Image 1: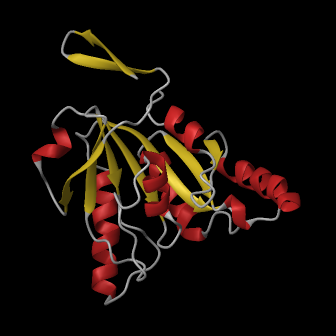
Image 2 (image 1 turned 60 degrees about the vertical axis):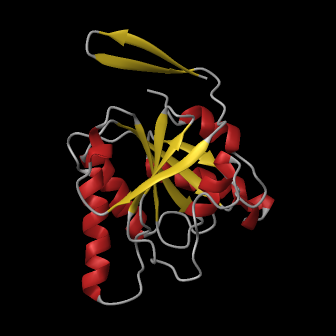
Image 3 (image 1 turned 45 degrees about the vertical axis):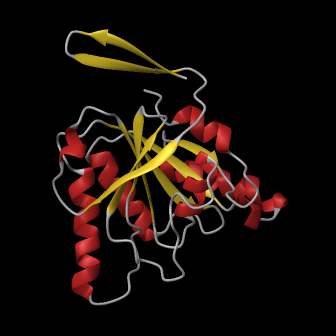
Length: 207
């Protein structure tokens, strides 16, 4: 449940055991739009192509096909807005690190991601950076984390696909990831086994 307290012209958000009860697609953007600055807080999801971002979003909201995955990595080329609980936007950013087509198209995707993350007027409450638990941080992931730190965006790192790591290796792998990400919170997750949903839900709008 999301509680609101008013203070002059702005709202302070407090998360108290939030449960996702509704989710709907609003629009996909490739440039400026009034939805960016309509006063509704935003939580963005970002990760390299084929890391399972769509599956994470779908398991989080309890819907099979809210976010669409593709057999062709890098196909998504919009910033997609989903209204959650009629209270905040879940923002699905294009995957980075791979895209079909020309280098120009790949550059367009990177430019679109940077444009959104660097936008000065959005109420971006949190960025969920999704990585592959087995692979760890790639160079592209590190570059994205660097960008988010430069922009001073609050970051949560989600280690997806923990079910693909042998139990005796998982603890060591998560410790290695934690050492790399510093003070950022790490959430182990499995979209396949539906593990970590509660931890991510509770974290999304925390200050």
